[in-house]
Image 1 (tube, chains in turn purple, brown):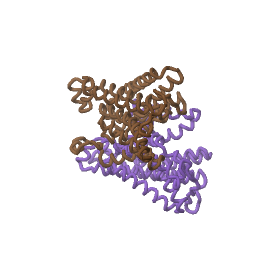
Image 2 (cartoon, helix red, strand yellow):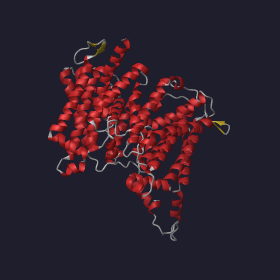
Image 3 (tube, chains in turn blue, cyan):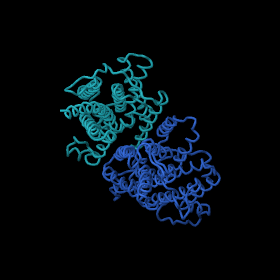
Image 4 (cartoon, one colour):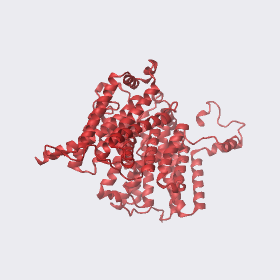
Length: 337
Length: 297
């Protein structure tokens, strides 16, 4: 919305209504992130049931990954099919560092994120220089390689059966041992990640990214360093995925390669695409739908994959911009006031 | 001497796997040339070919000589329908949308196969018996010869098609420049449809031929597609001869590393090669320096 404001018109028009002022205030990244966090706390408080709170924890973890992926897909116009690998690298890095080397959690967090970001940098640096979608292929290959390493490097990763006993997180002397505590923790982190993403989107970098997505050559001729920007966003999204992996490892306290397969990477892309790539809130919607929906699709059991495929292809053909922003009568009424 | 025989054995099995990768890579290249799309559902064509052949032969008891071609042709129809219903209706799709659509299609094919045939692995009987042929102390299965032969037939037929038929030339023209092809009166939409059909046909054939050796199950496609894709990139995307050479090289490397180093990591070989080629020679190993500069990567 902000880009549309014409230059020369003062921010505060004399006749602006209080309502509009309020609306503008709600639109700041900090306000949006805190509102979401508040809503999550409220939902956790109402739900209470550990099973459902567990789903909320996973929703928060997935959202951390998909908000990074949404920046990459919607704003930088690149696709990564290796997010599950970065997620897995974060989880395995912290798991191995804390159990095998006895590193405290507070140190394993930056270590695992830096490690994953380093891997992403090495993969992204050469491929993002190229035009086209070489990143998709490189990350696809990387994802499979990482999965093979998890399965084969038995002394370190425990192989196909995995390893456990990953310590819980202790925060200010309080061990996060219940689902509710952990849910609040995860959502606080997600709120921070979202705040970060929204700030990036609304900044000069965000506008530069959008210009890359629309018209890369024009953007680059206007002085946008396209390769570097795409690389930074890719590394950032890998860092978010790694952070999510860290949260996963210290919540489940057990890791095995099955959770970090290509299927999960594809599911993450599906979440972003279904909600709408053009807007980060689309990713939030898509992730919520695809994390909560399977709980209701239990009776389909193994065939959920068929349903995902069907939903995805239908949305891509009929509405490639995703679910976000579909005009339903109720929404329009509210928008008109 | 013992090592020599062993090496020969690895070479033979490497050529067999390599031929399969080459066929998958050719499938990738056909669609890439016509549309610029990387078809992530290519591996599923192979899987469908194998599954359908198993269904026709083992369940409906149709003789193998008929079941194989029927399965391959059915996969071709699947490819045609896929293009008509999923690719054609898009007005001005972005590359990212196209990637997601082919991914969705692969999920759909995989899910459909699981829905119909379950999660078990199936096998077809070999086309001409299971008696291994002795070759200087190493052995080769007759089915391996079938695989290699099919690759040779497909490759030469394809080359002939591109070189000597008017339709083949039109497809080639589309791959050079779609807009120019349209201007000289080539029906580009039809060529795209044809490419999808052809690519699915080759994928399906590969699936039928290879099932007696590697078995088939609903999730067999993804890894095969990945390696086939690595092969295609290795030989240069769109380069048919490169795909065949690349397939054989990758197959050999994979076979040697499985035999001499560790079998657990053999699946990683093709993928590491894929990454290295993308990093250092994105035009493929056969591209000349000028080509690197000319092509817009």
